[in-house]
Figure 1 (cartoon, helix red, strand yellow):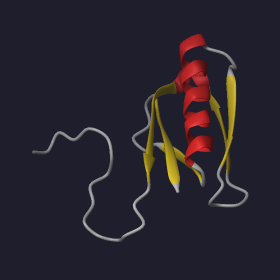
Figure 2 (figure 1 turned 60 degrees about the vertical axis):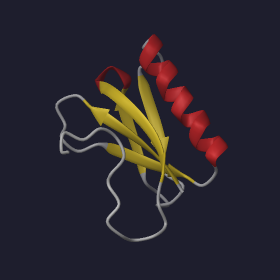
Figure 3 (figure 1 turned 45 degrees about the vertical axis):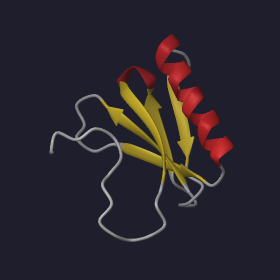
Figure 4 (figure 1 turned 135 degrees about the vertical axis):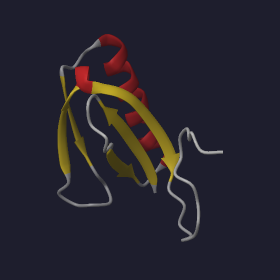
Length: 87
């Protein structure tokens, strides 16, 4: 599974959706990046391939960042992707 995670303005909890195929995840990541860059479409509708029926509609002007990563299948002490202030 591949996770596309969006950081929203004034929200400590990110919104994430998942894709099964890396090409689908990359396509969605690029679509969101272009929407942030151009401000269009104004409203972005997202669905999740892992959780059936999970839907989210976001104002693109409220999206601050997007990241794409592969979800590790093994349970363990793995760190969350992204930047960390901890050393």
